[in-house]
Image 1: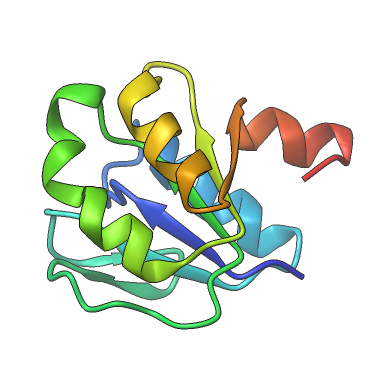
Image 2 (image 1 turned 30 degrees about the horizontal axis):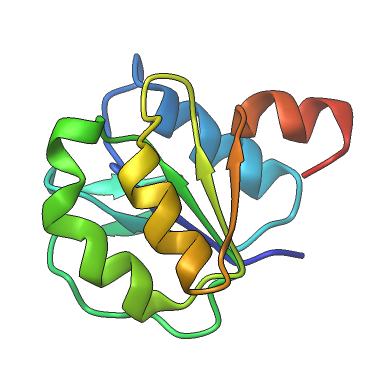
Length: 119
């Protein structure tokens, strides 16, 4: 299974990051929640600092492009194999940075990928 860092994790049940966290766990993936909101999500703490986690396969983005620049270094230091730009998070600048660091980029929906079996 793929260890997935959810960037923009939120305990708000109406947010897609919330839905993704629960679905990732349902499908057997380990999750790491990182965001600006305090609390828990899918039984895991939401880390509101920028501690780099090791062994992350995928970073799935749930923060808009306007808020991503402060996270660029963090994402690159995490060294994921891939970066998923969920709908509304598309960012050509970050995609170029990721490509330059050999990080696969996808403009896709984590929820759809899981449901169709191509996560």
